[in-house]
Structures are given as C-alpha cells and as structure tokens.
Length: 153
Image 1: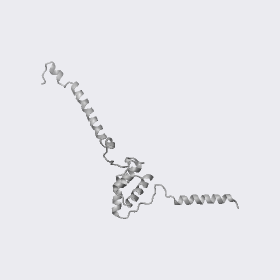
Image 2: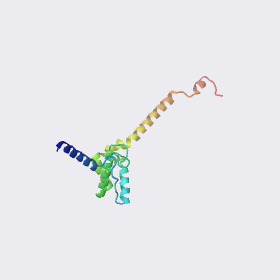
Image 3: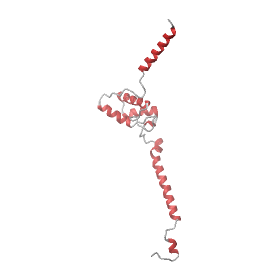
Image 4: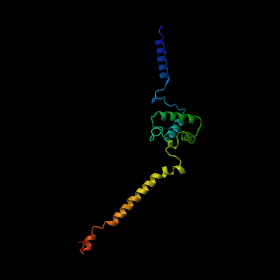
C-alpha cells in the first residue's frame, strides 16, 4: 500500500474536521437570553458602547467580528453579576475610553466635551468681527447723495 495517499487522506480529514468545528465569521449563533429583563439590559448597555473597529457604530449595530465578540463578553460579564458601570469599566480598561459613546466629564476629556462648543463660539466671534469691520468701512447707500446737498424725495 502506498503511504502517500494515506497521508493525504488524513490531512484532508483533519482539515475538514477543523473547518466543520470552526464557527463561520459573520454568522454566529444568536445570543440566548435567560429572560426579557436580561435582554432589555443587554440592548441598553450595548447601545451605549462603541464598536472599536467601526468607530461610529454602536456595539449593538455593528456586524464586525470584534463587535460580536464584545457582545458575547458583555453578556458573560452581566451573567457574572457585574453592574453596568463595572461592565463599562472592564471594556474601558481593555479598549480605552473610546469604547464609550458618553465618556465621563473629567479633566482629560474636557476638550472632547467642550471643544465643539468652543469652536462654534470662535466661529461666531470671527463672523461678528468681520460683519462689524465691513459695516464700519462701507458707507450707507444715501450718504453720498446727502453730502452733495440733495434731498431724498
């Protein structure tokens, strides 16, 4: 008997067994919730968390593989009896504050919270300054005629 086909058959059998046992990406088994309260809490919590890969999608909305893994991690932490704040802190410790849609207002997040308002105020100040400067340099429409002694009739 030839040893080469036996090795090839064994390698093919091993490859097929690994492929059959692996869960396909993008098609995970749906999460099973114990009760309605757990499901409501889970959906509320994942809506407040950001997918670290998608950047602008919540964990609840993202279809990325890491988001699926993070959702499973959130559910596991919830089942361990952790509070919402503890689950969020676990994810912040692991992925950074970026994972929160609403990071805490702290000294190192002031620019994040107040930066857009400051940019808006600065823009309004620039517009106000430009309008004032133009109003001071442009004469009113009837001023030239009145200067020559003509009346406006």
